[in-house]
Image (cartoon, rainbow, N blue to C red):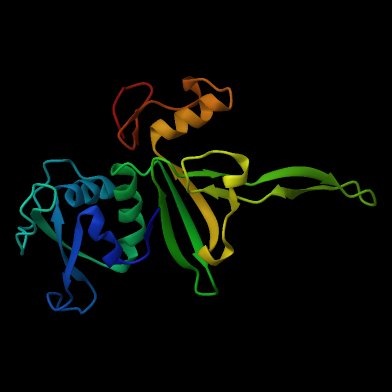
Length: 205
């Protein structure tokens, strides 16, 4: 499971924070991008793949995966959207967005190949006095970080990680979950990457 809550957590996703001294406003952080980081940045902002970015400042590693190819100025406000896209692009099939504490600190948890999540289940309960109904939780959200999917390997989502606000899936994982629930592929719109394809024009939004 990979955790993202700050700019420095984006380094494994190809976004390398360098310095705050480059910004005259003392607000943004200069970051170098690898090819993967550049791809996540462009996808996150809806920019075309051939967009020209500023040159990188450092060379990065020797291999293609760690070589720096561009640079951008980022703020902490972009950590969650960039982290989400970067995690999904790098094969984390499920990403959980949580909030914690009175400050509403947001954190992403990316689940890898043999890690799984299942949502809470609920049942409808009717108040006999008023006739109004509500829903009560019959099972909290659960996580399994082992390859073994036996029931005893599942555990309740730790509250110390924060309250789950949203759950994101890769298109492939979403199709798998729908198929497991008995729904066909027609239940989802056609996609290109992380963009829906317009039904009438065939154009990706």
